Image 1 (cartoon, helix red, strand yellow):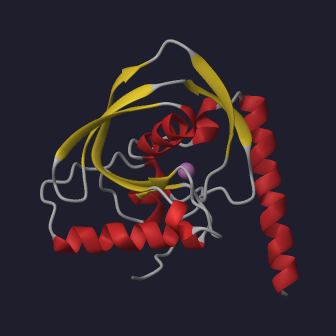
Image 2 (tube, protein in one colour):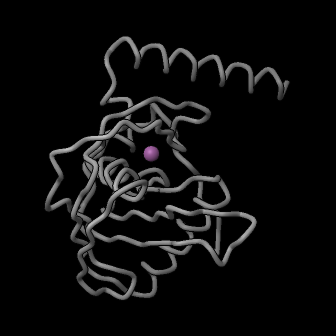
Length: 177
Ligand code: NI
């Protein structure tokens, strides 16, 4: 398995509408494994293909990405995921994203979603998700349409977050020098 290069805001690849996958073969499964490895290494709980520079409708996630107890992990691979139902109830959750390092903000999401997708073996599946899983799914599926969680914030909150990101990057550069 390999750790893939992460693309960060404001890279244009994060703003593309991704293409559907037509074949699930060993080559694709290798890519899925690499995506999952990359997600764990970077301590994320979800990763979408455009975040590693591939504009295909693929996400990987884990709503229990424990480092101490790897047997407790719950990895999921979703190809061509589609939200087919959303609950009317919404929840606020403090989200982060590997493409906007070190930042977090509260985003309003549907509490439950039903998602149709193709799995690791190429089989069609559907899940009804709630809690953290529902939030991760909405965040990651957004990525496949070029949408970032900051797009759900007010202009003021978004500006503030992007300023903090700029500062964080400047400090990181200074530490390197
Ligand atoms: Ni993200």
